Length: 152
Image (cartoon, rainbow, N blue to C red; front, side):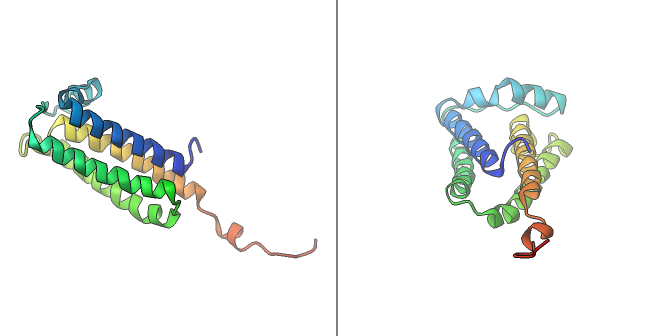
């Protein structure tokens, strides 16, 4: 295990807050980032360009901030049961969005573009990593039902 589930949540929270900050201050920098550009070109998806006065950018930033705040809640009050339930749903949603963005290029420019694919791809990687780490950290039945007080 490279990082604990709490550290991955901190990484995810930091990543989302950095994206929110950049979207609110300079959205063209996010949509023109090298990773977004290269991943979009590799998947043959159309490029996106955000302008500073675009109202959709604010909505996207607020939605990403809400997801980040839910991660902050799990960092402050460690609740592995919440993560064990939430992470598979987040992973499934991110995988569905990235699959839809890749499989339907040009049909819906709001979803089938390089920016949506790049963000959902990173989300898939982080959520899958978190899912695997949570499974490693889960106690096995042998650990939970260890005999107490037995002499050898």
